[in-house]
Length: 186
Image (cartoon, rainbow, N blue to C red):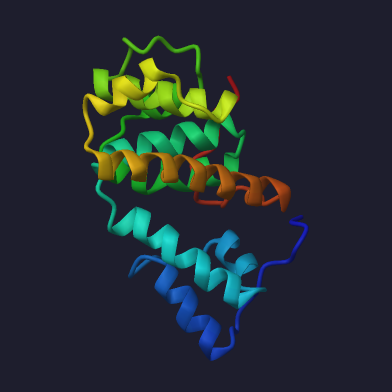
């Protein structure tokens, strides 16, 4: 049971409209639990929507790279909730294979495994920021070889944003969405 109960239908008209903006058109399930909890504070939800939607819908990183970063950040943060939402939807749409999704949950997976060199550089950057909140010069140089400055800024914000989302989902004890991909246990 989440620490803060998500809103349940029927929603107030303004909340209904806001929740519809947060969800892709034509989905058959209720808005995400995370979104329904956030709308207990509509002003905060609105501020968070701007950055989250911008990173997902208007970002400069290729979709597959964005989803690799999100999967690794949420996996390293032990956030089964957000990992499962992205694994079931956006990660697959971006082209991540089931093998790659599983590999994001295992930092000991050799980077030579299912990853291209630029993707391995992304994973190393996520891992360093997760472990130390810093990037060594070799890690920075590795991602800089593939991305311009605007993309690099976005990368660091993306990593921090999904660490924040992981803290939010874990801190509120959000249970995995019933339709989400289950987080691997091994």
